[in-house]
Image (cartoon, rainbow, N blue to C red; front, top):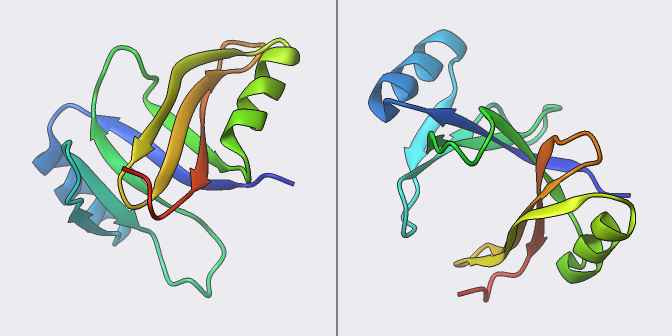
Length: 122
């Protein structure tokens, strides 16, 4: 079974959002060293129930919140999405040192991400 493993929140002002989530919810937030401005969010210890996520600059192509689902084979998962009436919104792309990612739309028009872990992704 595939599970939600990551969330993304879109923001207009990164520093303002980082300060808000740190102060209001006590989240630990640190800048990712990747090719785009992206901040990683830790919402608690690994022993607690819940997921971690990220903050990204707002982009009109994406909704305010996107959940990402872990899949064992991204190509197969994308194929199943299309076969079952969904659409590919953003094609498969590498996330260096993390894996491969794609964004899809379900039959109701809701966006979600799918991630295949692969530390050698470039």
